[in-house]
Image (tube, rainbow, N blue to C red):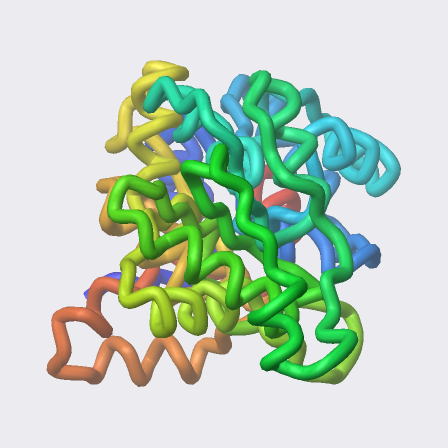
Length: 306
């Protein structure tokens, strides 16, 4: 069974591990930072991996920022980054529509990160932001909902302004069978540094799937879309790729589904107890979420390199 503690490896075994991959895909929330707080040691670890010649990509389900905004965040928190090595679901949702040759407008339930990436590839969209229910449902339906006939796709991500009117509009657009339905991710909760449970994009996706009776095409982890994209565009070898994450049901499942090696860090969602429970399970689905390796925090690999 997998889930080997990297800290238990001998120097020779650890060197074999380091030599076994050329490409690193690193999740962000819970691996590199918590909200706007950097996880100690992670910047040093990423820098050292890059110095060893590893190709480092940042893979995040968070669709609230554009790649340009992410470059600023990475830089401010001490991580080397360019737009080219940031694989965010906002960017990849725009790429997906671009690859389809999409020419109509997009209705976005989400944040400006999505619309900025749509702008970058020349795809038209409706504005994002608050769309509250100011009256009552009957008035809304009779007088206040005006659908744009040019809309041909609905993209749903994390939206702090989620509202009843937005769900009505999204589901109404999706009544058209040729309207494309894209979800940036299906995360149940949104990671923050605060001790509160914040509903994630998956909450909104599920609601709109339910009322529209449609199933969204999922961009983010654990969908293999990101993996397929990075393999195709950057010519990486899946067997020589390491996925680093903090959540078994997204990061690790994604890595295992793509044929990557997987490393779980215990600074985010899942604990070692969670991993042990998955290992004991008779469910193949649970076993697919077991990492190949784990370490307390990403920064610990720096001392193992010495």
